[in-house]
Length: 158
Image (cartoon, rainbow, N blue to C red; front, side):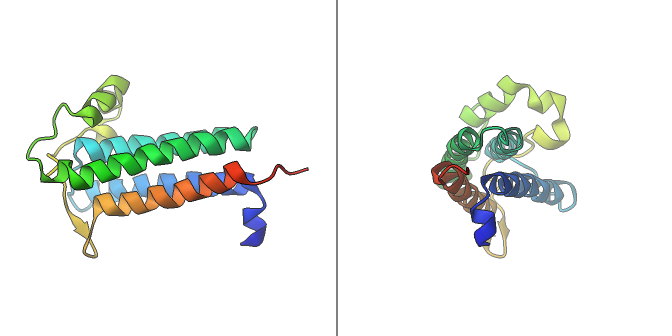
């Protein structure tokens, strides 16, 4: 573990893998178990994939990639908290900030199996092992953010 913490590039790779795994788990939940996503779920998928992309591209400048991944992770934390405390109790989350962001990126029309919101936020409020999906997402964003902070704050390698 100590060797991993001393190699920011490996941490960035770990962040990318965790982020893609989070989206993979969401897709399995959707396509295998019929748990349809709401706009806030989709926005969190977009953020996780953006984190993965930043980390994979960021091998050239790990500090910049760490800062960008940390910023995106904080956006993900905010989205997960908003979904948990506001959107999950709403019967309609259409045309919220999450919806507008996903529509603006055109990801919902380019890849609807992954990025098309198919449920209201209240309908998407399901649990896994007694914990709501938004809190699982929040936990993963916190782990990814902590890893990105470590990359950002670690001393440069010589």
